Length: 203
Image 1 (cartoon, rainbow, N blue to C red):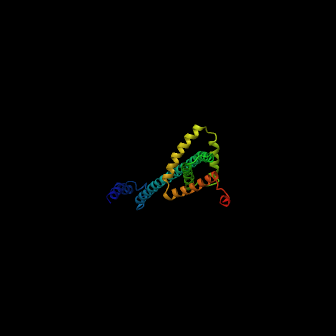
Image 2: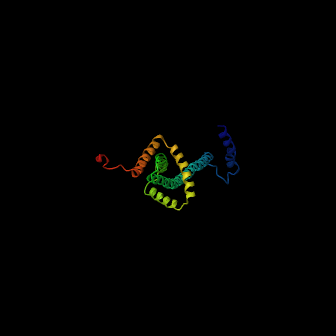
Image 3: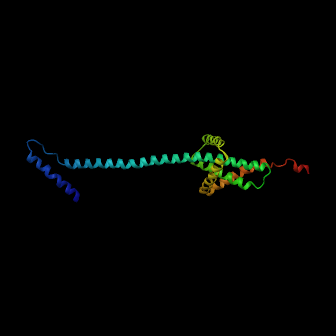
């Protein structure tokens, strides 16, 4: 109320004096003209501020969405590279087992779990075939051009990152990864030591 009183007091003398001083040259303003002008001005300012404030979250949301998309794309690329690198180590262990080495299942299972942790997380983030398969194919082709030192470095990094990816997963997700990995390892080892067909019949 005090603010309104000060505003009206500041403007009223000019409005009331105008007809007395310039009655022959200027017509008096209609009643309530200054009030309407002030209301319109305040409305315009409020609308401008509202538009400005409303624009900030929209811009921020757009930037945030772009950042998330970039982060996910980077993860997809890294997941493909790591899946390819870990796959080489995985197949190397299978080859050792086929050559007669024993006791390799724990390490083979661990590497396979890390690979599935990458694949599963990429799937949850939205990566689907055929793009996922195409990215893995490209990563395999890239990995073939690495020397042993480069492979060892990337594989070591991927093991550490894959372990964190696995650790950050929910209990249910970890269970699914272990289940899938165990099934895959069993299939690998089945090709190493296939069951002897007809063994029981020979007895």
